[in-house]
Image (cartoon, rainbow, N blue to C red; front, top):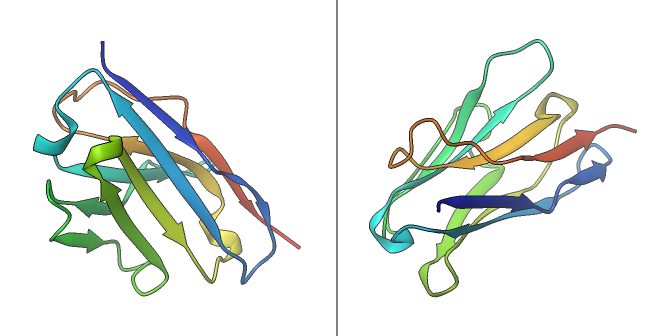
Length: 115
């Protein structure tokens, strides 16, 4: 049924960039708001960014505003998170998420920012 497959994480130096992707299937992607969350060791899961169904409205956590950009391609059933000017505190497992499936979380993708 529903699948959310995150990819694009990795090890990057402070100040670097990564682009995360989330491939969605099993539901009508274009009719659902999509989100990126992250969870660092010892911390609660944190909402990072949100994008509306058509991509025209976005919202960001204050901690990433101006550095991260969420986008989506409904034709590809994919949501992206462009992360620039990365900081060590951005280190976390990143997950995409939709409230249409409140208990469903994918595997996530690890982002490690370290020199």
